[in-house]
Amino acid sequence: MNMLRILLIDDTEKKVGRLKAALVEAGFEVIDAGGLTIDLPACVETVRPDVVLIDTESPGRDVMEQVVLVSRDRPRPIVLFTDEHDPAVMRQAIQAGVSAYIIEGIQATRLQPILDVAMARFESDQALKAQLQARDLQLAERKRIEQAKGLLMKMKDCNEEQAYTLMRRQAMSKQQKLVQVAEQIIAMQELLG
Amino acid sequence: MNTIPPVMPLAWVNGSDAPEKPSLNIGFMALSDCASVVVAATQGFAQPYGLTLSLKRQSSWAGLRDKLVSGELDAAHSLYGLIYAVHLGIGGGAASDMAVLMGLNQNAQAINLSAALQRKGVVNAEALARLVHHNGARLTLAQTFPTGNHAMWLYYWLASQGIHPLRDVDSVVVPPAQMVAHLQAGRIDGFCVGEPWSADAVAQGQGFTLATSQSIWPDHPEKVLGCARAFVEQYPNSARALVMAILAASRFIEQSPENRRSTAQLLSGTAYLNTPAAHIEPRLLGDYQDGLGNRWQDPHALRFFDQGRCNLPYLSDGMWFMTQFRRWGLLRDDPDYLGVARQVQQLALYREAAQALGIPCAELAMRSSLLVDGSRWDGSDPHGYARSFRLHAMHDQPTIRVGV
Image (cartoon, rainbow over all chains, first blue to last red; front, top):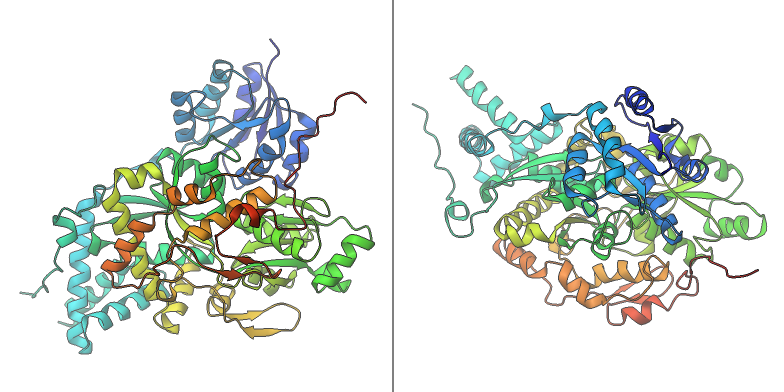
């Protein structure tokens, strides 16, 4: 069985350097596509990789889409590695932020060691995924918005819709959320009594 | 004690129409036409319907697609062409049932050429066709996704000028925010993209706008609120509430020029487009400059609402993209155009949402439009329409040769 040839696309801030070293250490042939994503189709044509690894969040993913479409009439087209191949592996990979494109026909078992290394080495943004208690937060926010709207109606002697419009315009032109402006109105009212 | 005004009735929340899933992840790409989604999520338009929307900016359409299919995103600001390509299984990933909940906007994409071509006098369609056909020039023109709207607008316009988009020029994919840099570096000669990236090229003196998408098809369908069909089947109340929130935000944006201007301000923020408001605002208000010295108030500029006319997911709008996929060989066979559109376009759900807000809905599920090449599209004969074009790639077959 031939060793798989991996093309590594490096166009985001994630540290691909360590990933490359780890894959080479694991015995894979790794080619680093450090250039411009616009040249990706030509690069794939020249390198003829079995596997292409790319950051799930890379803008270059849309360029890979072109590569996939152009290759679809070849004897062995390039396809996105999806949960049709192996649901568990794919989900893990996506969560870790790795997307893999493979030459159709490569077995998922041969891909597993590569993705294992990639998932371990790609920096993940799990911290960002911490979920807030959205429901409680939502109710609290809504009460604050209602309160600010009421204050504004009194201060400006306007109706409900006008008060909302004033608050929204203020929020949008300051690039803020509505609830932020509501907090400011309430704070100001507390200050001025 | 402060008197807290009574909270609005929570009928939607407490009744049988309460969203099954109250907190939704909504994807968007950094483009001016994501505005209604961003305004809905940040300006308190979802709470009255019992929803909290978390915005998730995406860096590629392919990534957005994968997350819609996997359920990591519940719904997203999407290309019409992307939703249909996934549904039909064209491109990366297997076919997966998709849904269009509503239209998000019409118009406001554009085809632009480089300042270098401008200096050579290639400033109109005739000069471009001459350059391509007689001067042996091989131009590289970029779009944003192989089955996306911008590829379709670019191909349609080029073909209407007698230029075959797949044979006479090279067509490449470039992410929207990178277009101007590639143009400046001479790696591409032109591109088709959504705002503000065309206005940005003009403002930086790197290119000029050759044709707006509304000159190809006035009030054409553009971005949609897309989701996996599983989402709308599993959470129909959440889906309806989401459409109501975004409809209310769309109506608000168009209520006054002040609201449009503050929308531009909001979009310019680092969390959204991260681009100067000065590049976003003019075209958002219909104030166009093409970089060739022409300035006009565009009657078919970016629209989010237009009394609901932008938002009804017409069957004919969805079908049009399938006819173009067929025309350019992306689809090798004719799909059941009407049957597929009926599955994807969530007309009934949209009508419920619009009616609850008192927004008028057209009775018909098709609309009739006249396009730049003089052809009329009304959805009545998609099979014939797909075959009606002189330039196409319908019969392109795999280049497999047997023998010599």
